[in-house]
Amino acid sequence: MLLGIKTSLALGIFALLYGVMLLAIALVAREHFSGLGLYRLFLLFSFILTVSGAVLLALGR
Image (cartoon, rainbow, N blue to C red; front, top):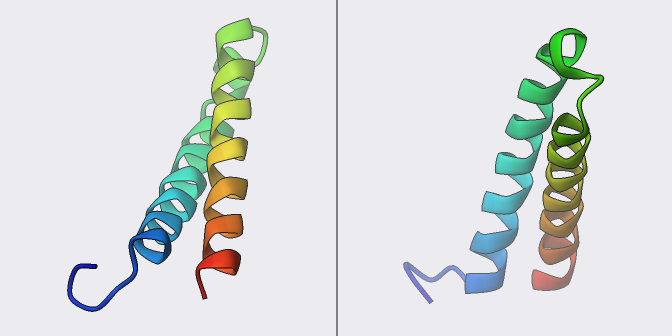
C-alpha cells in the first residue's frame, strides 16, 4: 500500500492506461503492419492488458 492506494487498484490503473496507449499505437500503425503475425500478437497482448486492467479496477474497489 503506497500513499493509501491498494496495490491491485494501482496495477489496474496502470494496466488499463498502458493497454489503451498500446492499442492506440497499434491502430496508428495498422496500415503498415497489419499483415504480420507479430502485429496481431501485439494487438492481442494490448487487448488482454486493457481487459485485465479493467478487471483489476472492477475487483479492486
